[in-house]
Image 1: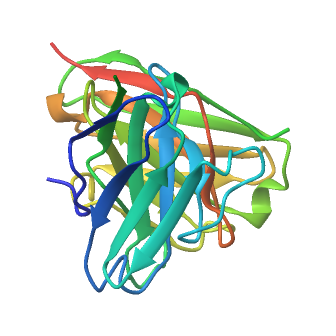
Image 2 (image 1 turned 180 degrees about the horizontal axis):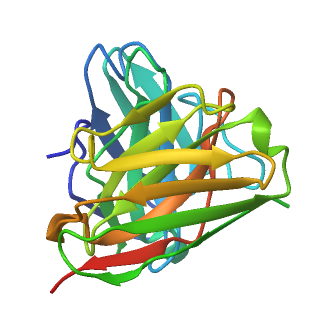
Length: 112
Length: 118
């Protein structure tokens, strides 16, 4: 059971817009930034969104993030076949050490 | 270019120990906290452990607390995870990840598979 809650699956057709939700609590999303990771089959996770809404260089602007209260969302517009992957949300968990992270269970995105 | 290369995984019997290593390059290693994150076959990501830039602070997931120990050698640009009393449920690919206040877990290694089985 993951600390952050994501839908296990999502799907869309090429060109569509899809959103993936992530729900947490006051001790993680409610008080810290949200990060999103993309994991293509057989590869390591890759940072997609940091600090709720920011995209690292090289990440297309088709990907966008938002956060409100203890929930966050990842939106992918202009869906492409290469977007088919697993997506994970993550956040720091309040702790004495400041080192603890929590993840969502992941959402498998299928491009139909 | 940031590179994180894990090693030390493999097949181990339940109850035995294993030590993972992560060799870092392409950045100033002792400026950053580092973490281990694992992924059981076909499952999601699970944060395992983290260590501050100087090793002075560590943290563990409840699932590994008391069995795993994270450490680092800044002179060797290396991160370690000592895993004792291994269980079947520890079977996973283990990733080391660099952490920054600005970008979170921004770089990940390729992963190293640990299989706990008799």
